[in-house]
Length: 307
Image (tube, rainbow, N blue to C red):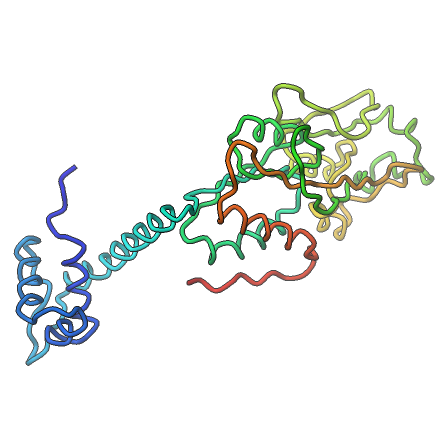
């Protein structure tokens, strides 16, 4: 790759000439001599082979090419400044990245709120978010490729922080034969029906969760797919209420009137990796995840203003 001929300092100088209205004003702002500023811009034009400024009376005005290049250069200079800031923060122990793995059943609305609040405090720290199902979260944490994990399982050897519970509801389409029974449903009624279950993404010791006594069982890869199948009349399933609120309101899903076990409320836990100590960015994200874990899911979310 050919090295750039124009430096960031030269782009900053051109920006100062335009932003401050002339060479003399730019020189004052940059604490340099006017001749130095003029030479820098002249050298830029020579190196690029394109005129950037033209003199209109006593004022330097951008050419069409200069206007395009200056606009692009602002992004370049901003990114370079952000890179320098990130290097400074890393020198102070600030992480470049936080890796978060979450069980797919955990409410994404709470994640959005926490991550949106984290953004203006992140100092350039990236978040790598990964979704797994059931024991897949535990495997990722054990493999050391996650800094934080949210799971509904009690993971051995880790001290988790208790979060809120998530309600899973047994549902089927309103025209499903189970609803047409017109009475309270027992597990014996379920045995002859198709149950839709979600595949555990863990590879070592995948787990089955929820009643699995049905003679017919279809396994799908995601909660969203399960909701689509059941909404279409294919079987029944236990699904997180927060994911199917719209289907319940619109009447394409209806809770099964089970005599027991119609809903369950597993607790979720927040875990941190034992492979490395927590940095300041990770600790901030932990606090935000805990704070927003109890936020009502039906309250409209307002994104924070961009810096």
